[in-house]
Amino acid sequence: MDGANDSSLKGFALMGISDHTQLEMIFFIAIVFSYLLTLLGNSTIILLSCLDARLHTPMYFFLSNLSSLDLAFTTSSVPQMLINLWGPDKTISYGGCVTQLYVFLWRGATECILLVVMAFDRYVAVCRPLCYTAIMNPQLCWLLAVIAWLGGLGNSVIQSTFTLQLPLCGHRRVESFLCEVPAMIKLACGDTSLNQAVLNGVCTFFTAVPLSIILISYCLTAQAVLKIHSAEGRRKAFNTCLSHLLVVFLFYGSASYGYLLPAKNSNQDQGKFISLFYSVVTPMVNPLIYTLRNMEVKGALRRLLGKGR
Image 1 (cartoon, rainbow, N blue to C red):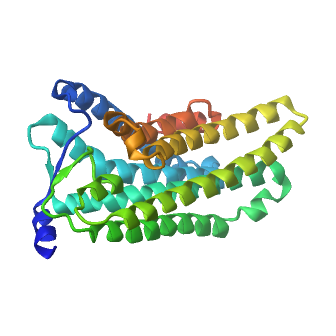
Image 2 (image 1 turned 120 degrees about the horizontal axis):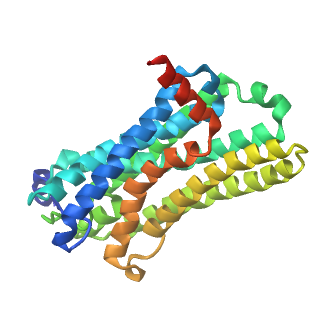
Image 3 (image 1 turned 135 degrees about the horizontal axis):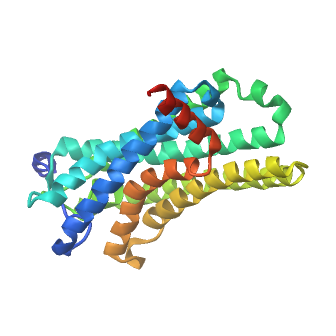
């Protein structure tokens, strides 16, 4: 077993997004475009949230945390993906694979918690507007953000370490375009039933519990929005909540399909495309969803560009 695991230290071969090699250049161009949009969109949100005093609110504080999370995740996985798509070398070093594994799990769990925190923030803003500033004070915001990041890190350390203990027996072909837990479990030659059970249990917990809390909070928020007499106030509240709900469903939809559905019931290429959507598309569209109809962000961007002239 030790000898088998030592051989894996040489690295792994990533099998890529699709078995059709003629599509690699198309995927390369699409992912480069998505990655550049991800860097631009998320960096803009972080920059505006820091520089514009009008965006120094809990909502944009948590949104900048979400953008930081998406930047960290895509930077840990997309460059390696592009290297493998560009040339014949499909390998990744052992250290690179371990890094992807830890960051992938860290991002997933942290975003689950962060989306709950953002739903709570909208609930307080709509249902308790007079107490909003007192409840969502800077100390509480920082505490909730730290809980989200440390909670995700704890899940990542436990699951990744548990997965890396599996005997690999010299297998180096990862049936994916990045190192994630389901693909790493398939490399093992020993009994993986416990690892699979832990993975299913953790994924179910981080899906069912946060999603239930988010949906309940938005049911209460919707009731409060309908009681707002001002049509402009209702429109603004619905737009803000709708943006967050869209991000929630994109994230949980792709994550649930990729992790909770039995592998035998899903096509391998289809599973890779869902993982690609979760890994590349979701971090790209998050800032677009939050900013396209957000006048505060558009105004902050205009003010920032106006100062630069």
